[in-house]
Image 1 (tube, rainbow, N blue to C red):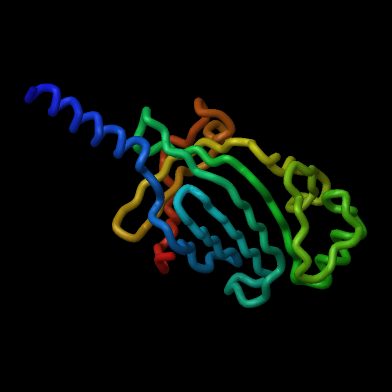
Image 2 (image 1 turned 180 degrees about the vertical axis):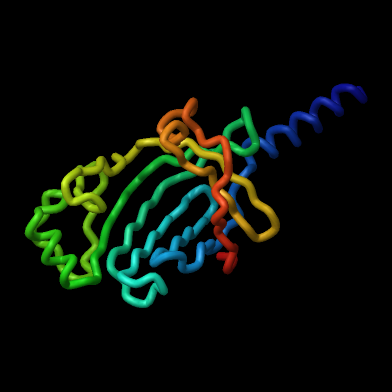
Length: 187
């Protein structure tokens, strides 16, 4: 009887540690760094990531906002592993010069970009950061494989490299980024 209870409790705690893992809910942020602010709103396994690109290094003049939504899943193999499934990627532009440029180049296939109008760019090819080369935006259902750790109120993700870009489980990052998200508020 004692051994049955032991296995029952051990199984319960193992299942809770593997399947009960989540990121702490709330708003996480990487403060302004070289014209970029990153935020993540976490609620259970649903995550909305926002990247705000500014025209200036001090994050005063907003230019672009990327918003990515999806779900995170934690794996049973390793406690640091995290898999992200994309649902949606959108872009809004807040700079009139950028609007003119995007429209003239038909970025993501659109010629009707307007100030602060969010466009769904999920699965499209877009010449955003390199005007001569289009980048494939993730499709809904695409996966990104990563690692994470939490130290007090700091959330670290894996450092993406050319070799370890998170495109497959085998190409999952092996080291952590020095930049971290700080837990700002609980939601």
